[in-house]
Each structure stands twice: as structure tokens, then as C-alpha cells.
Image (cartoon, rainbow, N blue to C red):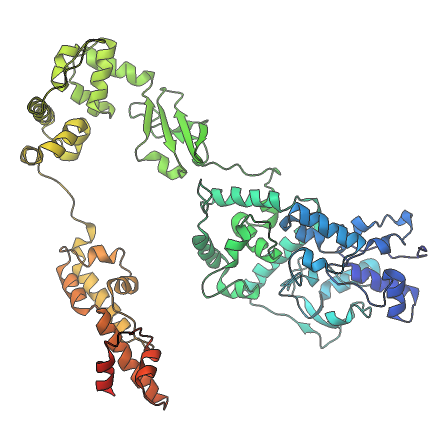
Length: 618
């Protein structure tokens, strides 16, 4: 193969087709076919975005030009944009095709065409034309301007222009950018233009750095990491795709997503496909939309300020609070390090306070804000707790009062006191016969246990006369549980009056009634096919949470009565649809038949229960 005597050096971000155009014009070759024969060995050129067989051209370029096939692929085609979203095997196969040739190159990545939103003509930026002409003496086609939805130039922040050069003509001719007055200049609203500029900058960053990134196996790990950090994926790997899609729509807006063909009636069905780790190629622009949503930009997605991956913390970022009530650092973030282990894919963490020795466990993913409340599994109370409880027991303070002061079960205090030799075991034989180690244990009969538990419960009330029922249950939970199971009537008669709170919405009867009336009127007067008036539909339109619980409650009697009187039974709803269907058919001038009425009303009535009703109306 003969060497070319001349070949132009590619400009920054110049697409390979533009380099070949400058070669054709500089050489003064009259026929584009002759140039294609010389370069490709064929009268037709290659594809704009993914040309194959580049080695044939690079082999003809003098070695001193340092224009290998790999360099042309890295700097002058869109392969860097695709690499992070292709599996390792696909990347290797695609590189081989681009270097040595493969007429089915698009089938390698699984698309008949690389982009489904491909424009019909080449695009340019008018300010880039002026800048390139001033810097290099001639204009050229930029890679970034040819990408789908790259409507804004990332360099100058202005809208690109649709040229007269159609993509269908590129394989048979060579055109350099020549602006004319009737070229179509794209325009967008300021908010949309700003988002398009961000997208163009993300795409530009990938074109510049994508060749050095790893393949999709690594990208999938980053997705998993960031989805967990954002709370869209739990510790078992289950992703809340629906919530993620809804948040993406709220972040971008439907009008912007529609430009990418990424919005479908309030949902983004592509989201679930993008995050699936199944090695299937997905459109790069969908990946860029998701990456910016998760990390603020594509660059930030692949590397933070230090060039490191953000660490995933299933229990939130450290430090963590101490949960010991008697510690001077109670609920303060003093625990810097925790030990995390996984059991059956569920993370378990051990937290140890360095100031009091209090140790507790937590399991599953726990948000940082939830560490300051709720129950934890206590492993050890720590030396500070032990010192305080020992001092209080030596002062002969009641174990019940000690338990309330240090926020633990009274049995814990008693067991601790007996183990330390501060409390005599005989004093607490009522809680169960104390037997030395090794002696046979005789279980008390039912009557004895009932007497013991009753006395324990009365002693707890006597020691804590102002305690509410819930507090008594904490102080002696075992007695409460046993009496609940075996002596319920006695327990109710010998317990403080329940202070169970009336729900906060109990006083909203009039407000709920007004909202429910408006919702019923709205459903009943709906212009289209009648909707069923149900508790669910009323609650949804009225904006009332948990309608089934509230609309059947005696706390709001007016609302309950109105809802019961105005909800549709299935038969009543079907009859309303039948009346509507008959009116629709008559308004459209159609012949009204039994079948047409049922079909228009969308009623399944194979048993013919409604036939008499419809016939009577006809």
C-alpha cells in the first residue's frame, strides 16, 4: 500500500470526516470517488460517527505524523462517548471493527443505528466558525456538534445551526462548513437552553476523557454506589425505579426530557433499563441524564474532587451518636468508627462510645437522621453505666427508680446487682425462685405465678404512682406481658386509665366534609367516561391520606355519613357509564345497540345482568 504524500493534522475535536474533507480539498482531487478509492479502497466513504477500517487510512499516513488508528479513534470519532456504556467484550469487538473493518459495526453494540435521535444534517456553531478561522485559517466540523440533542455549543454557549449538508450525502462527497444566511439557527427558552448547555458539556467531557475510562462493568459499580447513597437502592440491591423516575421528571421537567424522547406520560421507562447490570447497550444520552441527576455532572459521577469514588455508608456518614442516657455525650456524634458485617446480604453494625463504653447494634440501611431515636439492640451498657448503677444500689435506692433514671428494664438492674453482690437474691425470690447453680429448678404452678405477677404489678404501681400505663409496661414488661395473656380482666381493673391519644384529625370533620363534597362533585361532573366514586378516588382528589381508615371512623361522623351515602356500588357505577355511553352514541349519530352500549361503556357483562336495564333505556 502506497504512502500518502500529505495528510492534514486533525484540529481539536475535529470529526474524522472533516479531516478527510480538508485532505480532499487540499489535494485538489476533482472527484470525491477518486478520494474515497484512495483512502478507503471504495467509491463510497464511511459512516460519520462510527467509521470502520481506519487502519487502512493510518497505514498510508507517514509514521512521522503520529496518526495511528488508535489516536484517530480516540480524538476524531465518538468511540470515547460509548466506551463507559459498553461491556469489556463489546469494547474490544468495537475497537477491532473500527481499526480493521466490519460492515456490521452497528450490530456490535446492538443498535441498527447508533442513535435513534440522529439529526438529518451536519451542524456547526457560528462562533466556532469565526474562532477556528482566526486560529487555524479555516473552519472545520466539530464532533460535539454532531451528537444527538447537542443543540448548544459547550464552548460558546450559543445554539448550533443546521447546515445544508445532509447526512445522506457524506459517503459520496466532501463538504467543509460554509455558513449561508438561510441556515436554520435553533432557538430554545432560557431554562431549556441552560439544561441543554449542561448536557453538551457532559458529552464534551466524555469525548475528551471517555477513552481513558473503564467499561460498563465499572460504570455499573458506580451506579450501584450512587443509587445506594441517594437512597434509591436498598442493601439487598432492590431499586425503587418508579420513585427514581418520578424524581428525574421533577428534576428535569417533561418538556426538556421530551427533547431526548425520554418522557412518556409522566414516567421514564428507560430508567429501569439503564441501571440494569445486564451488559446491554443503552443510549449514552440516557446515561448522561441519569448521571447528572445522581451526581450533578458526568465528570462528578466518575470522580469527585479528589478523583476518588465516594464511599457508601449503609448507616449514614460518620460520626454517629452515643445512645447512653447517662453519658455526657448522649445523642452527640462522637462514634467515629463502626464495625460492619453482612449476614445474608444484610449489613449489621456495632457502635461503641469511646467516652462511656456503651455498645449497641443496628441492622439494615439506616439513614443518618434516624440514629437519634428508635430502639437499638444493646450489647453492653459500658463502664460508666455500671459505675452509676452500682453507686445507686449501694445507696439502697429502689431498683425501679434506678431503672427509670438510667432508662433500662428493672430486671437488668436487679440481675446486675445480684451479679455484683450488691443485692441479695433472696430479696427478689418473688420474681422466680432463686436456686444455686447446679440445683434442680422446680417451676411454680399457675396459681403461684399469677399471685407473683399480680404482686409485682401492684408493687410497680405503688413505687411509681404517677407513671402512665406505657411507662409501667417498660418498668416491668415481663409482668405486663404475662398478665395480658393470662389475666387480662384483672390487669385492666388494676392499671391506670389509658391515655391513648385521640387522632389529630378527629377535629377536622367540617374541613374534611367540605373537601369530600368538592371531590365527589368533581368526580360526578367529569366530562368523559364516568369515574367510580369510591373511597380511594375521593381521598385522592380531596388530598386526604389513608381515606379508608378516616372515612370509616366515628371521629368524623359527618364525613363518614356523607361518604357512605355517595360512594358507588359496582352496579350503580356501571349504570352511570351506560347512560353516558348511550348519550355518546346518539351525539355521534350512531345506531344504538346493546353491544355498542356495552363496548362504549367498557362493561364486562357476560351473564347479561344489565341487558334488561339497557333495553329499557333504548
